[in-house]
Image (cartoon, rainbow, N blue to C red; front, side, top):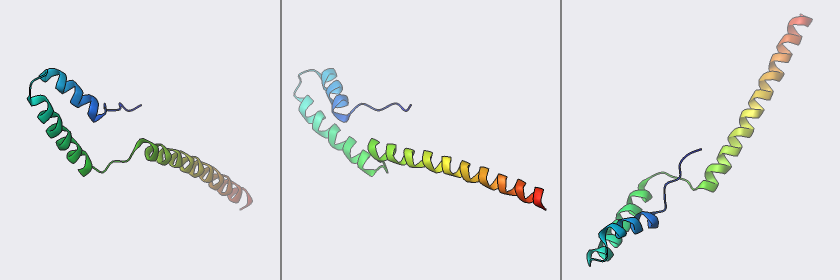
Length: 83
């Protein structure tokens, strides 16, 4: 199971805790949030629901391929026995 990164808000909150109540906290929060969101928007990512849906489709496809391989093997054996 893949590790899920913490939400951006949690990360910014932790960083804010390290800065304390200084006047920089609000500015760092805004700047960091903007930078992280900009970087993430450039990545080719899908949400968890889309990922899970594609994983389910892949599992069904693999099962179908295995079934077809078995059917093909049976037909080859049958053809060899008849031939």
